[in-house]
Amino acid sequence: ICGCFSQHTRKALLALAERADVSLQDTIQNPSLASTESEELRVEVLETMRQFSLTSEEMPANLYVDKMRQWFTKVHVADRAHLYHPCRHPDCADIMDNWKLISEFEEELAANGGNVWVCPAGHQNCVLPSATEVRDMNRNLLTHPEYYTMRADYSIYENCPLRRYRLCPGCLSSGILMM
Image (cartoon, rainbow, N blue to C red; front, side):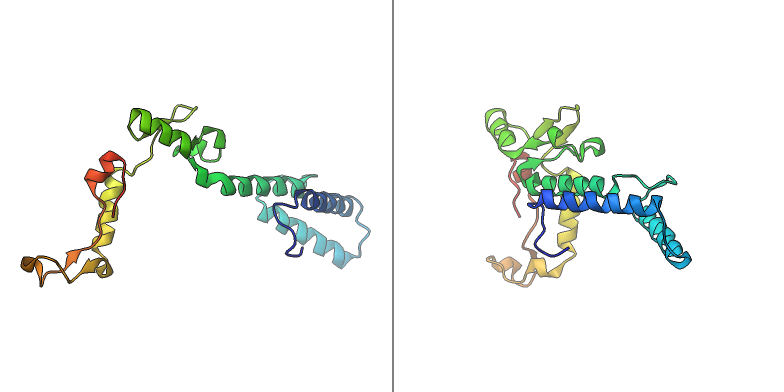
């Protein structure tokens, strides 16, 4: 497939996937091949089943169409994910209906304050990092000398390297992440 195809050429890609499914099923059901070609087909089918993690003995009739639809779904989620706060629970990870629009969250935050929201499945989500995540990030920043500065405005600290960046717990509680 050439580079002209993308998620915007959905009909063409689905038509190609459908043709691939029909062609594969015809070849499997009507093998009029020489013995070496038959063995090649068998190995190719086994490899396809392994790549797609198929466990049944029979190749699904709509394998490529289903995979193409799954790909379109993933592309759609990736294109729109920046507009949402996803639910952190694994059961809701792929369900966009359970995610919170950032604009809605910010309206609620402005009206009510707080940084916690609950998804429709009942999972509680915090938009800001936990205290452990902040500690881990600050520890990570401390381990990198490029985040230190040797120049300080105060004469007391002239020869002492100081942290240039860290996550501030005070800003975290007010909902502003600063470094």
